Length: 334
Image 1 (cartoon, rainbow, N blue to C red):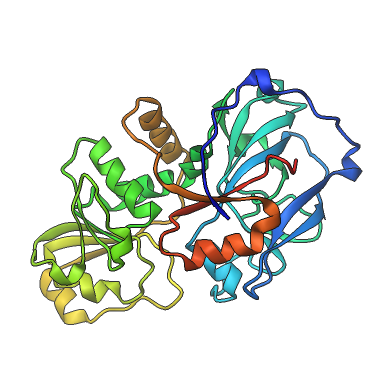
Image 2: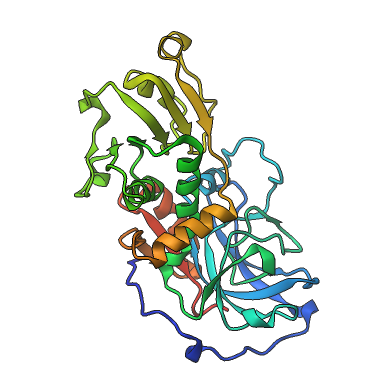
């Protein structure tokens, strides 16, 4: 395992069409999870391309420390489409190598938020593989060059969606990648910097906004609170710091049933919001902020790994507090 060194953007000049095998022979090397705290690389047959599909050679895939942790460990509660074996992943960037109905996309980089293209495994969310068949209308066109940071676009869009759902936060709970992106987006929208709670001292660091231990926070009048910690008991902790009429947005993913003591919520008339998946409007908004130079994606990828290191990579992503985002680099795999 190594600390990621982000290479120079790749351009269209670097691209040459790959040999296109018959569709029946299309094989991808994919990360496969079975809920036993292992992550194996296995060859999987891809479903034939249908009308409107494109074929993508993946370059970078991010590991999600939220949902994927529970797929990996076997702790995921019942979830639509959930079964083992499964291919995880909704944070992949790759190059289009075949687009019969969208020739304008050939040779261009796209962001892939997931795929269901495997014959012998569930795709949930299915983008952590060397090659993907995906509908053209599902991807985001990134142009003729890309960097590993573009794998963070889904998380940025998720943070943006939570802001749209619950309002611009003055308190963010959790300082992982999602929390950092939520804070950066808030500032990119020219709003006051939020306070961030983080219990792990290794994740506080120097930021252009306060990142503090919640035990030291004496403020009791937050109006818009966004939880990105995944802590099912967080509502009770947050209620004591709310102003009357405050809103709490639950934007993490919770292994246990979230609950709270009613009297404090009643006295303060607190509203609860749940933020789910991002929309195309969220993706458009964060891409615009990135391209304007108002939202930076830098400094969030701390580790990278080759596909052959997948088992150690997943253990690192979920077990090392200093690992913010780990990227699997498929450069030699496609």
